[in-house]
Image (spheres, each protein chain N blue to C red):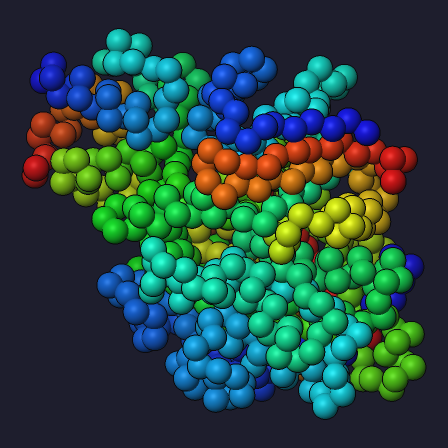
Length: 163
Length: 86
Length: 384
């Protein structure tokens, strides 16, 4: 099972440039979506048939903080001019949406907010995502961002027969 | 007008997170939207509407009103010059 | 699907009032709950909303809960009481049953009053946990996928039953109005200053709403064993990603189409067997055109009666999947098609909804809930 992580505080703009995904919308994303985007790039870059629309790959993102770092930024703009670009990222599941948009994944996408990092809960939920007959693989990520510059970010590419 | 155009370019770069771009990189009359342009999208239109209100006191009622105004930096600057209240 | 999953209890609170009886009366008589903001403390009073017609104090009194709890939790407790009562799970405790809730606002209605301080019940999870502890549920979890949250809670609950982990689950969602998302939706310029008109050529956006609804979902075997009354069957469901844009839907409604297709396939039903569709139908130019396209693709032989009930309640966001499920349940039980209010002018890019409440014997109902992030869910409720 392929596993990747991005160390806390890493220079995400530099990592983007190193990976060369040619996706300028990256710079509009909040830190959670940027991390989700980059982790997925690291997992699937060079995959055969990449960017062919598919339904058989699920996206599951777990965290404790959700999108709280960005929520705080948005809340500050409410004082005079609420920012639509920030509001877009005030949902914990936008990160899974961004991964899906980039990679053309039309399968199941979800975001789970847990009380803490809990391997048992996470992998139980991943097993349940494979309950249907459609899902054959999944991007599974723990992306937890107390601030824009501190996080725990790791991801796995899980296949049905890994479980 | 030259100064206003440069000022608008800087504000647009900041507001829309156009990474690594400088005012020199944006042509005054280049289309902002669409594949030939800066590739801006519907959320960017909304941020530009906020930019007009925040910086120049101009209030556009709907995104549709923005279509003509946001054709290029030049059209934006003309509109700002004509309608600014601050 | 081979497992037989049934609904044995349902509870709801929304702009139509507390409880299923109030909802039924409103749906049949065409009485909308949308109106000016009464309870939310805000300067943005120009937007009509679907506010639950009770203050936090009144909700708390009804719920028997502290009035300093988040409104999201208070709405949940009121809806849960009705659902659990109907399923015969009160006064017995829920100690063996998990609660799956959907919300986005959580305790934010309290937090935004003290920002940059922090309400201890701010987080989505905490607002569900409060309700769970009140009823003694085994454990609780919260799904937060925007406007498909409650529908996804139902799907997740179904997974728990199908893999044999539990015989009974309680699923649903809750959302209260907040300045945070009222401002946010306004910044996206998708709020209408008039009551919403889904699928109408003059539609200009949505009205925000609030409320809560929960369903007791169990295996048929469990329901029969304990002599519970079966209200409806969950025949099938689907979830797919539109993979197009963070907040807009694709022109051909791909995510919606895939979700509905999955639901039909799981249920083993042909499109012609669907008697009514409760659309997501928010009233935004984008959703209604996209959803109409997806529906026309699903029903190439002609659409069944379709309506959006959002002109009754507003768009209740995270709770919409379960609130509208309860309306579908009422439609099945009482044999009527909920009407589409406020529709007058046909739009060629949109379907023409059913505008009059009419008696109809319904066997299978399809209902949609589509969330930001392109998270599209659909499920089918059937007469038992």
